[in-house]
Image 1 (cartoon, rainbow over the protein chains, first blue to last red):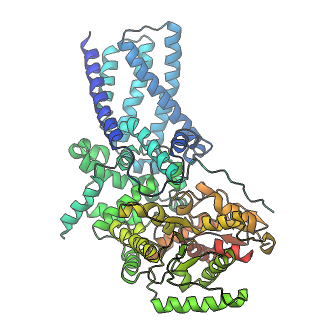
Image 2: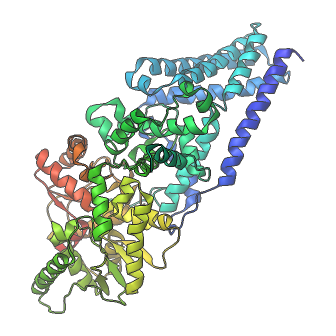
Image 3: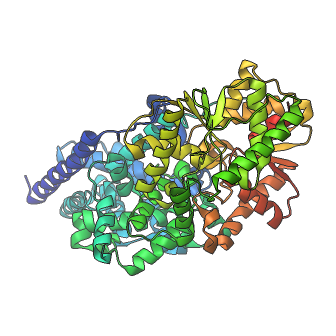
Length: 212
Length: 426
């Protein structure tokens, strides 16, 4: 195996172990102890937290910002595809020309979405004021992986750059904001559990009093 | 205690390793900024300092600085901040002065982190360093030292109650219509917001009339009747626990089966949901909000309101701590359905409802009055759009803020509590 593939494999192992440490810690901590009397259905609320509560119909951060929401969604899909491609490419799986072209074209769209998200962060004053170097580095690393994955799928010979870039991303992932890959799920779980415990979620249907 | 040791104690709060929920929240914000439009303080002036993510970040940046390897080695990389005077000054300004902890941003956060909980955590740190704004702390101090946050002497309370009782007996034409004080063995111990005896005694009369007509076995305690807990707002868990313990103790002393919490959003939340966790144990009695109780009375037929007695158009303001923070959304609507003949919802309403601006201790922090009233414009616009003549809200803090909004934005509406509108229908 080439050295750059070994480097990326080691980085993958480091990344997985680090994320596992975060994940196991969260699992071990479980739900905070609550002495109040439960009044709702936590299981339903957790399910709602990951579904209905995230839908563009319910979430202001989605329906008031549909272009950003769509770009964010595409960008994340592109990231997952790039991750899967890395494993498959590393395993020596070969794709047909048509399939490679299709994936590369889709990644072309998702990486544009990523660049748009980055541009928004650079252009909007409010967003710039919220940002730190980690926000930019994370975007550049992830968007870069999508660009390089698309390039590799199109047959461009950049294996060294590709695998080293992936390795850098994997090593950076657990230490910067990209670790929301783990914390996002924990956060939505906890929010669902919390609102479910109090009966806030899922929203209770009510007979809206009739207007005159 | 020296400044340094206070800072160390404050940092210990975010270094606690045992709370998976808080660790998740402090690690998950991606600075997307999409929460901005969910906040009334941001909407009022588009000031980027008031974006909810910034409120999270100032607390999370301290977490990163002192609890993560990246923050310790390369603080500039992740915006990890030192707990220094500049950070503290900014924390006080944005965590106390531009947030009601209403939780609307939480519902709409793209990640789902409970922003109001993180703000409360930041306030907890500031209270550990004795940096609660003096105006807010004086309200807590009054509650701790006198038993109620408005420092009403017991004699004044008793005089007011006796006067209200005479009025009640006259209205109901029954000398047995009473407002019981300190009576042991009653089923219900009812609480008050000290604003009621001080400024809004008619809401006590309204509830007393309802209790009378429902045939309820109830009492007030002169020793501890204050439903509020401003230490929830200040962030001081020790003082919050002391206030909770007092009400729990008096309930046990009087042998009541259930505590009914007066119409107070944060009071309901802090006693029912946060209280048991402040004192580290469950209550040996039931806890009800008066909204739930009123709804139960109507559903069970113990009181029979007549909606034709309330013909003017009514709208409802949902108190954040009762709805988002307490899961009570259906009950107030069911009550209004039976008590008024013309109702219009605000847009948005329920879990999405905008805060009036009076929560989070804002009403007691006069130094932020201008911001509070600016943020209240969102609510004023909502009310005006309904065309309602009466705004009902089951929260005395909200009543206060809505009265001020009513004047400032010339809405020409009447503000009522839920008990008042129910009593009007009886």
